[in-house]
Image (tube, rainbow, N blue to C red; front, top):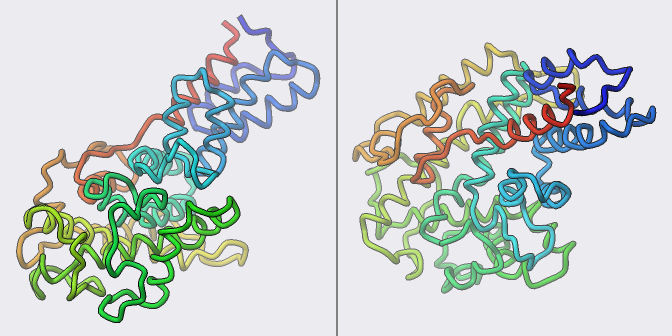
Length: 351
């Protein structure tokens, strides 16, 4: 039984936790801890952790997981982080993006419950950042991890060969991607901050090559590769066409109204914070765009072999289905943050 702190009304905590107001819970409990009621320290620390996870402060996920290593959700959180050191044993989201995407889908839903439209838009934008790597993950065996990328790609990748359709900026990104894990921590961090999402754009062009799909068969979503490298045409034609379709769907989402809405929502300028109505309209237009039939009938949202929508009650209906279609496997909203919330409730229970 946890000692009840005189300044905390125990009846106020369950509603705050039910609404996922972990920041408020953390502030409330911190006041009590500072006042000498140390029995609330674990609840306070858990609430701070839940707030940081909800904020998608992925830079600190490994640290949070280490602080709560005995918790059943710690390993899942560690798998959703980006490694801090170039050669960390735990590759996290560089090894697989699936845990991070399950977390981001959960964040969208919790932000909707908290009635935070700007944060919904920000998270929807982040979901688009690494979709091409998510599409490639099954073929590469990882999510574009610079530590092992060189074992898979090669030939013209990052060489500046004029036969490669990558722009000069993408060629520079490709070179950095091959070497990012061989240097120091600041260089590795700079790569993750500024270049890793661009690596996905380069991989997308490699997937959409002319040895796999002919012009006009599928939506035009940008540059394609007329001279594919051998590494990009490994696997059966069926596998490559499936990858091409999932990459195209990822790029369609990246250029969709819901993602564009983020660019029209500047923070700190008193203008442009999107309303719920604007988000709903943008999402409906996005869904129309991503679900539109393709000339060859290969839109993954129509042909996907995984279950349709893993969560029919999600804030942006169909978002999980879209992510699942790009990944080629079912990914629904996780329960990681809610599991931390359950631990907070247990740590602050007065019964």
